[in-house]
Length: 326
Ligand code: UDP
Ligand code: MG
Image 1: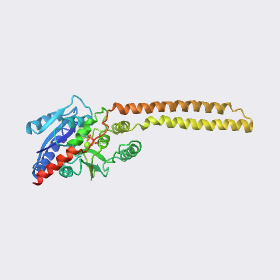
Image 2 (image 1 turned 180 degrees about the horizontal axis):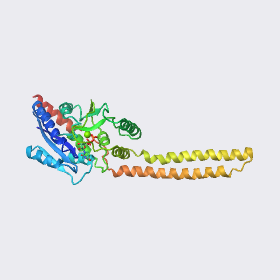
Image 3 (image 1 turned 180 degrees about the vertical axis):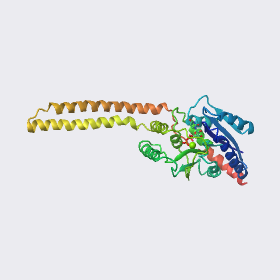
Image 4 (image 1 turned 90 degrees about the horizontal axis):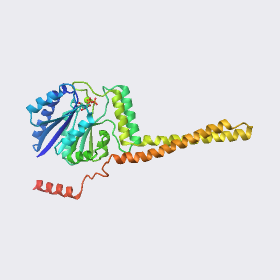
C-alpha cells in the first residue's frame, strides 16, 4: 500500500473548505478505484485564521478519520504552513495544494501517473496565462522572473506554482533545507530532481478573497531574491569602481586644463579626489559584502549535495520489479 498525503495550507478559508473537501474526496475516490494500492490522508494547516476555518476542520475531522489538521497559534504565513505540512505528512507521496480550488484536484490522477511511472520525482502545474490578473501585477511578475534568473543560480520557472506532487525522497530533501526565511519556489527548484511541468490556464478562486496584496507580493519577491542570491551585495563594488573611473576623468580634465589653458585645476582635482575616496570606500564595503554573502550562505546550513539514487535504491527497485513480474 502507498499513502498519499494531501497538504493544504488554509488561511480564512471557511467558505472554500467544504467545496474543496467535496472535490478532493470525489477525485481521490476515483483514484482509489484506478490505483487500488493508494490510501489517503488529508492534512490541513490552519494558519491562524480569523474566521470559522478551525470549526470547519473540526467538522471534517469528525466526519472523516483520514482528515488531520494542525492549527497555528497565529498567522505565520503560507511558507510556514507548507513547511509544517511537509514535516508532518506521513505519505510515500505528498501533494501540496491551495484550499481555494485554484489548484484543481482533477490534476491529481495525471500527476500521480507521472510520478508512479518512476520517470519523474515531481509533477507540478505551470500557468501559461495570467488571465484575471492586473496588467501591472503581470508586468512586475515577468520582471521578477527575469531578474531572479539573471542574478541567481537557482532557476525559477516562470508561472511555476506551489501545486506540487512529490515523492517522499524529494520531500525529505526539501525538509533538509531548514532555513528560516523560506522561499518555496526557489527551494523546490534548488533541490533538483526530475520535474514534470503541466501547463494550465489560471482560474479564479472558488470562494473568499486572496490574502496577497500587491505590496505583500513585492516584499515576497524581494525575500526570494535575498534568499537565493547575494548579487545585491556586489552592487557596492560596481558603484565604487564606477566612481573611481569618473574620478580619473576629472583628474585628466584637471591636468589638461592646467597644462593647455593655464587654468587653476583645484576645483576639478578636488572633485576627482572626493570621487576617488568615495569610490574606494564603496569598493571596500563591497568586499566586506562578499564575505558577508559567504557567511550568510553558510548560516543557511543547506545540504552540500542531494543524491537522487545510490546502488542501494537501484538494487531494491530492481528486485521489486523482478518480484512483480514473477
Ligand atoms: N494561505 C496561508 N497563509 C497565509 C496566506 C494564505 O496558509 O498567510 C493559504 C490560503 O488559504 C490558500 C493558499 O495559501 O490556500 C494560497 O493563498 P491565496 O489564494 O490567498 O493566494 P493566491 O492564490 O492569490 O496567490
Ligand atoms: Mg488562491
